[in-house]
Length: 462
Image (cartoon, rainbow, N blue to C red; front, side, top):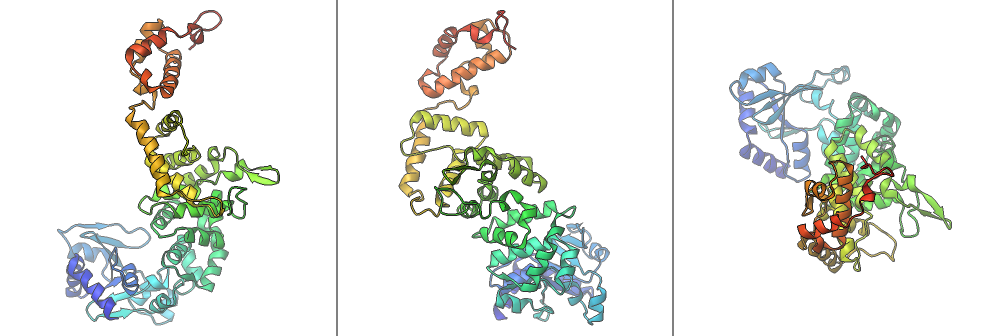
């Protein structure tokens, strides 16, 4: 336990935790470091967050820390932020705890989700309160619900998702009784009010080394079919002649290959081929998926139900819609410009497009298919940078001619016809960037057949 003492002592010395503890002790209250801080210390890592568990009531905390930065933020149980530190008031002991003769802090720890999160450290006596075997489970690399798993799940169904996240993140196994309880209670995950919190668990999982373990556990427990059915339905679907893995496995490989520092990009990787289920066609006895990047309805429904922001949903949608656009060693400059125009239309950076393409190429178990080499990546990046250095406009607003100037030349009123002219000009400029000069564009406008913008009676199309 010496290394645990060292880690937790360091926390006290370098954070506002110790003054809070001293204030509580001086007032006659008990106070412990609890939950994740103790768990992480036992795992040998410095905790990211440090929480305090106390028998002081919220009104006691308001009085003791009057004049300091305090805020009551409790929802499901009483939590007060004191100088940005979470101070949780112990929950009332339940009948089972009373019958078992438990006293504080065990009465509160027994209501927590997992045994590895149900420990408390007493900085005064330097002793560990571990009434439910959390330390032993860490040593055995086991995830187990605290006391009765059905009771813990009934109190909060999102704990099932958390169990999968912790197991995948630490490389632990979910203990048999806890695993079976999740399978039996998976349907409860759709309870009202859980969507935002499930979303947060998914986003947190993106920071793992390999979030695929998390999704595999969600699938094995039956949770994924209720949380992300668009992904779950890809399991056991053959990936077709170009892949050596199922569609589900391919999604997981691609997600793992994307950076942990970009969670929404990474999530897009885990979902990027979910449209293959809707696009499936059988050709010569093999699965093919023409236009699958356009089949986004199921994926977007899942993201909406999980209450992802409109910004995140648009970003994921753009990545999925654009990920099949080819960029090869022999791609012509014209095709690269059209690629960049597509990315501009999707509001997607070429960097994120390349990240997805690189991961998509890597996530393939077909021995014939090889990931990009560093040289391959440099070649493709060079093509993009060459196109950008040409200063080609990648949308109609970059044309060196305005809508008003087009109106004056053609004698047309403002309306859809002007937009059609700009689109035609833009298409020509993508073919030849040197055309994007005002005099050249004006001459191209004069050469246009005005019949393109009028009906059979000579009236302008509106």
